[in-house]
Length: 226
Ligand SMILES: Nc1ncnc2c1ncn2[C@@H]1O[C@H](COP(=O)(O)OP(=O)(O)OP(=O)(O)O)[C@@H](O)[C@H]1O
Ligand SMILES: C[C@H](N)[C@H](N)CCCCCC(=O)O
Ligand SMILES: [Mg+2]
Image 1 (spheres, rainbow, N blue to C red):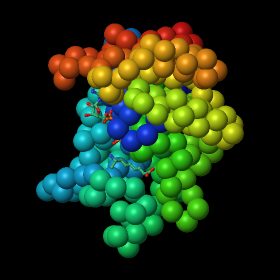
Image 2: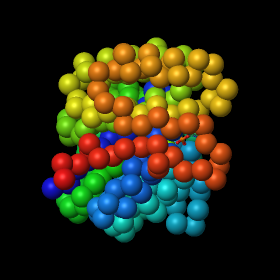
Image 3: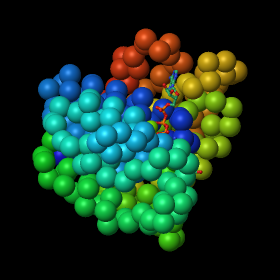
Image 4: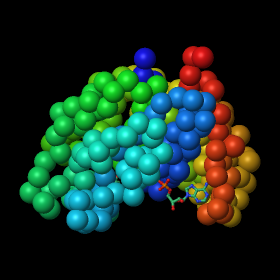
């Protein structure tokens, strides 16, 4: 049975891709078969093969099962902005049904783990009164919340956690990810997050040099039954 996970965060640039690829690597190392899904990307390069987004390429490369780029990332925009605004500029609308179909087709491949990376934060607007969170809620995908550790993250983390609970999704855990190398009162902030968020912490990732891996700071054992 496929275990799906949706990686959300307190904000864009909080570390969703860093954590998503780490979870894939850790699952691969346990002998699991894996797939990644980045339903919507904004911030793409135009290539001879079409639009390509770095996050989606990373997820595609880390997965053990090989699928076409368009399956990993069906909806892509050039401009690195809110996707529904990029869509508007192109005269397009983002369809929830396309996101759902893409998810279903990957799910049916039967990997042990399917890691889905959001875009921006939890309540990402898709336009027409819809949100990416609607897809996650309806598909009942368990959620991991990445908290980008920087000043202001307590409010962002709590608002996101409250919205997740309000939406009735299964929050399997949260991961603290230090994105500000000089954050003051770092440990006190992490302690406050432990107090505020009522689900397990799956890891605390320090600020990393580009050559360093987050893998040893993350524990995925509780994501799997065996
Ligand atoms: N712990 C860390 N230490 C150092 N740099 C980090 C850390 N976490 C993330 N970064 C860097 O911060 C940037 C944003 O991280 P990342 O791309 O994972 O965020 P994201 O939440 O996936 O963003 P988006 O919303 O664009 O998908 C990247 O350059 C990444 O390498
Ligand atoms: C371009 C960026 N890196 C992300 N892919 C998209 C972030 C959208 C944020 C929308 C918002 O909540 O304001
Ligand atoms: Mg990302």
